[in-house]
Length: 193
Image 1 (cartoon, one colour):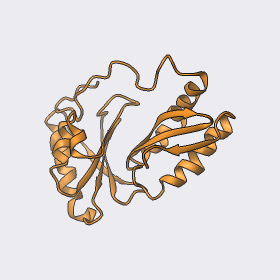
Image 2 (spheres, rainbow, N blue to C red; image 1 turned 30 degrees about the vertical axis):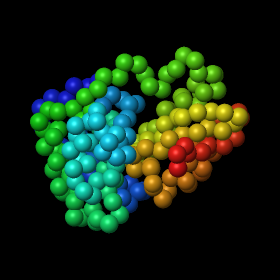
Image 3 (cartoon, helix red, strand yellow; image 1 turned 90 degrees about the vertical axis):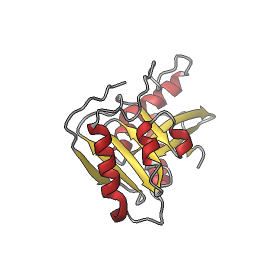
């Protein structure tokens, strides 16, 4: 896990396809490359002091932390213009204090499992190399869940969860890529949606 330290923090905001999510991008890595943390509610945020603090804002419904950004999803009843400055300033002050957003050490690569079949290893490799960077650009993540009888199940995290474009991304993007690269894959579905 990367250790946060007091440093100048530059934080800018990026919109993404989910109108209820906003990506707050820092000028340094917040967590290790390829690692992400999705907090769909305050109860799940016990390992992240930053996420716990953000859930104190009534409008915040989800917090996602990956590489050099934090994606915050707000309730539909609030407009971003009302809260984006407050949320940005809070994240900036938190990081300027040298605190880690998620102070947890990852012992092993969460993508690697020596018990995976060759097809699952290939699926995970394609998701990591081709899809993760594109989805992170939109403030989210799609994580491998399982593969059974030609069906790949993934979990949507961050801005991807609840995004109106997620079905198109899932079917037109990820499913097309995986079925084209691996004949064993017939379909991709989102778990828990």
